[in-house]
Image 1: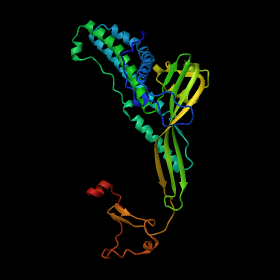
Image 2 (image 1 turned 60 degrees about the vertical axis):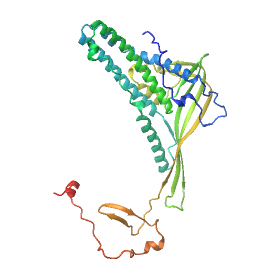
Image 3 (image 1 turned 135 degrees about the vertical axis):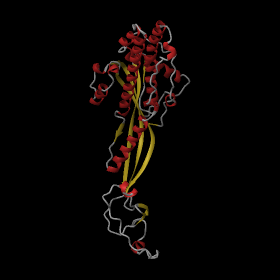
Image 4 (image 1 turned 45 degrees about the horizontal axis):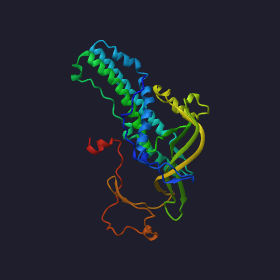
Length: 364
């Protein structure tokens, strides 16, 4: 397959990529990479370089379908063969997006689990909230590739149609490859996908992100809400610098690959598997940056057994307000409600009926 020319492609570079400064570092080694005027151009060049392997991954399996468009003998056959190519590419786009969702959710959180059920709940809530937010975003709702076959188009001469459709098949493959790269860039914006940069002399620097939920709790015996705590949502940006670095297919890796990573590779689309690579080398420096995204405070009241009159102000089956022993003093708790004139008889709740609710409300 002839290498495509990507020089004319411009990508939307997220602002977060234009400067990699984060708030705090565990190491004393400062980040030497500051925002500069050339950074956007460098990132566009990096993105263009990632298009070629994706373009090959898309176009090589479809070579026979491309050829069937070029050799179609009738107008109907030509349009049908082109539509099959278009459908195959849209299916690839769906498979790619599903794989990205798996990558984003894969090992996303370093959860400490929490020592108490309340801590565990706070940790799980934050992680699930992040997954819902990212997976429901526009990155995972890409635009489907569109056909150029209109009524005006098919009115052309057959040979002209064939040449334009063959050309459009290649254009669709290029567009799909660039759309896939743009999705990756957009996921870097949400700190979901990292970036690897290769330098001369077989050196490499790559970044990846981990999410962490740190929970703390304490018991306050002076309050009804006896269990209180906080949950911090933290993003860790791991920056690894390698020498003697090279890329290889996961099946040829000289190191043991964790079973979870093997599962991720196994669930990648078949047309993509041959183009996945491991960046391998000798680690010379590791820097871990941290950013606290949010902090949540929580409180859980003890469920203690109590025996007391427990009032609630109601109308029909609706509770307008209610109060308990923690809302009033000891004197008020034992006092009778003689502020209200005793003009109402005590009413017994309506006996439950076996009729369905809609029949009880509407009658019948």
